[in-house]
Length: 148
Length: 148
Length: 148
Length: 148
Image 1 (cartoon, rainbow over the protein chains, first blue to last red):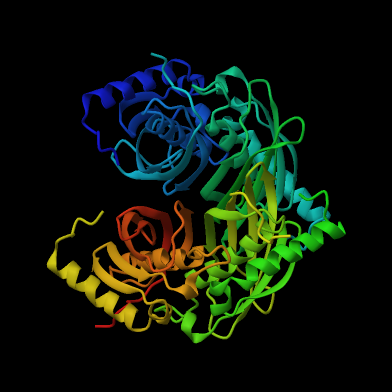
Image 2 (image 1 turned 180 degrees about the vertical axis):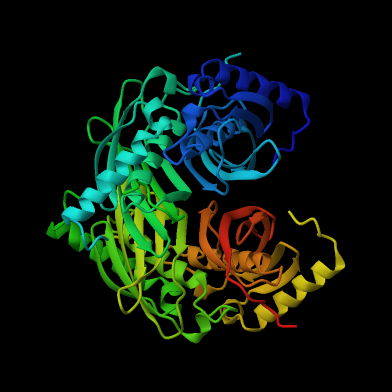
């Protein structure tokens, strides 16, 4: 994806954009989401499923799995320090998730051209088993994420 | 969709299933989601966007819009009192949503056969303008939602 | 959707745009797709499944079901006589389709704002049973479909 | 994905399943689709856009791009010689494709468990530029593709 991956400047920019985004990201904070890593076109985040995230079936509400995946998508696609928003997201719930589970989401852009991008995110449990598979479509709206 | 729509027994069953589901739905309670109405194959819910739902861009996090839509989907597809879970959901974010906005989601099954179903949900703001368009695919897993 | 539905001028425009589009639509002709009806924001088309459309399992290839649904989507979203293209489409194959089946696709826009739109299409067999459920996302690219 | 990738027996099985599927795949033959390679959980196919594939805008109809991607998906997910069908497919059309273009689709399973799988396919033009991005969800229905 990124011909500049591994490039120190691109990595520094990704870290700076993520820092600015995370400082203001109340939804992520409220859900206890933490940023594990970020790089050009990629990001990883974790979230622990607490009781307040359970649905009427006693498993993690799909909305919280989406919240984690969508957040990871946001950090990956804003990593070029150009303000980018989600236009569309879809998620397959492939395994129920119980309370107390520690989830990790890993995302990376799989395509980007002009103002449009596609980013794939996989959510796994503590054992590394996939519980959800997400794909997001983004649109760059102009302006930097982090000011100079 | 429902040949029994308007049927009092089907309506009573939907209300009973929704009641059982809502009593245990901690995720919905935590987000302040309220059930407006439920019927055979359909449901409506509301949620007010509070500051804790904002993302790093200062607008409602897509995860919370998904949470509202996905919840509405759950109540619509569990309305036949057969335990049904989400297999897949997709959402188009068509308009940014600011803090304080009162959102309404209206969902209805558009197809159902055997254990599979498809449910469409539209999320509108206080003025009735569409802010998100959701489609969910469900799978019935067996057993009742509300016991007799 | 259309505040002007039933409006004679909007209906005439839809018919004119569809005529121009269909005259040049070699893919539709090749598959024997016929336009049943068109109106502001909606269209219906039919296709008979011939042996050349079968896949290795002996049922209608999903690509041909998509072709029919995507075509119907195109006529619905070009009905305002503004050149509009598909950005994204998704389809659920809910029932296998055998050779000789006469399929009907009915589509209508469910949302439209600015240059973006969402259109839903349902494909049914001769008995009216749903075989595929499609949703398309469109983008208006400028210019008329039919010149004055 | 496949712990047995590179395994000679798994590769031979994939080739045998693909051979059986392709022999009966009239839709692929009709569109001039050719199988480039197949392996456990993956496949590549090519198709040349001829005039009969053009839509009313003069570009390759999305239905034919989907046909190519969906076919590649089918060969990837049937490569374990268990009859598998498409349940859902979605495609982003990211660049218009003109007549005469030689397209290549490369697909691989990104997740599989029990009877369900997810397969990603990217379609590129002769220059290697991405023109469409596809994701398919499959369901194994029982029985072998190629008999012993």
